[in-house]
Structure formats: C-alpha cells, structure tokens
Image 1 (tube, rainbow over the protein chains, first blue to last red):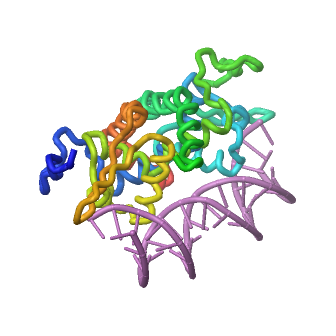
Image 2: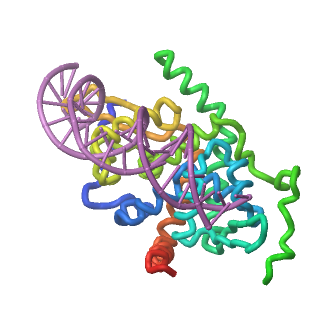
Length: 133
Length: 133
DNA sequence: CGGCATCCGTCATGATACTG
DNA sequence: CAGTATCATGACGGATGCCG
C-alpha cells in the first residue's frame, strides 16, 4: 500500500481506449452548450414531439423568458431543434427536435435519468461533506 | 403542410412516459453541477483509473488551477470522486471515481461521444445559421 | 508537487418592461 | 402568445502569490 507500484501515466502515451476528450476546443464549446443546464432540460422535454414556447416555459420551470428564448435560438443554430411558426391568431410557435437533436436524446436522457436516480445519494454525500466528513 | 392537423399537446395531461424532469430544484442543482463544463471532462478523464492532479490539469487543457481545484472539491463533496494523498516527497495526490462516479460514467461518455461524433454537423449548422439561412 | 486565498474583470443570468 | 430590449448583479473564471 505504499503506492509505489502505481505506474506513471506512461508519459507520451494516451490512455488505451481513451475518449477523444481533448479533441480541440470546438468539442469543448459544443459540449459546453449541449451540457448546459437549460439545454439539457429543453431537449429532454421535446423528446415526445413538438412543443410550444409557453409549454416549455412551464415545464422547464425556473427558466426565464430570456433564457428560454436564448436557449431555443442556440439549439436552433446548432441544428438540434427546429422552429415552426403558424400564422394564426393567437400566434402559435412550436419547437421540435431535428434528427440530429434526436440522436442526442439518448445521452441526454441517460444523464437526467442518472440524476433523478442518484440525487438522494448526492444529497447525503453533500451533507456529510459539510459536516466535516 | 398547413400544420392544421397538428394536435394540441393534450392540455392537462403530461407526456406519456415522461422523464421526471421537473422533479424539484435539487435535481436541477445536481444536473447543473454534473453538466458543468469542467466536471464532465474531469469525470471522463478518470474513466481509466486514478489520475494525478497535474495529469488532469494537462489533459483537460484549458482549465485553470482554480477551476480544477474547485471542480475536484465539488465532485468530492458530491461523492463522485475520491482523493488520495500519499505522504511522500515529492507529494503525490490521486483522484479516482467512486462507485457512484462510475455509475455516472456511462451517461457522461455517451454525451462526449456524441459530441465527438457530431461536432462537424453542428459546425455546419452554425455556419449556415450565421449566414442568414 | 499540489493546493489555497485574494484580487479583479467579464459575462452570463434574472427581473422588468415593452412589442408584434 | 411569443417574443425583444434594457439594466443591474453576482457568479464564474483567470492571474498572482503564498503555504504544506
């Protein structure tokens, strides 16, 4: 248990089947946007089909108009969702996942599912950490 | 294609097999931390075993000492990683995923894999959006 | 080597009010 | 209903310097 047998990270060699984590800063940018708190929730809430602006504002709950608008616009620019406006009165606008967006759905739901499943564990750990461990 | 046949979101009824997305604000908090820009990358880079502080600072690449320290501490408080310090000279400190952290690994790698796979698509969409589409 | 504390700029976010 | 515009704040993040 001296730790001496722990081999160094084999300098120069990457981890074996390593993820292309440091694939460049663009990947980081995308990851940052996709991994965004609001983006995740918006995408997740579109997993059952097109939804209206007001609907999203209700279910995401806590998001401000500004953030919802911005998030939707960004997701649109990234080709993850598509906006459809109907020229009616009252106006109706719907947002739906594009094929690209749907391909992301699996990862997003996995993440949210995990959080839903383990949030109590985390709560305990946090409490313990605050107590001084 | 008039869009008139689009049925309303069945007011009052939730999505059928819906995710517990609005499970409370604590889920949101956890999701926010886990979805944090650096957390994802740190967790991903621990997927092959314990890693040293300096190693992480190199591979995450772009993270500052401050952010790495903060991220590691928070992940520790949440019970996702574990810190092990060896009383040697020079000092060596290693971080490793806890079982809880490993359970998150699947979702995290899915997300990162997706980004790595589709970042070029997104790049195109962004360019097109900026052009005015 | 690994880490923490402080200072300090900026940028993202939320609240509010207004428009098509 | 579905946004846009404006403003204020505060959290985030970088740089620096010190400590175990």
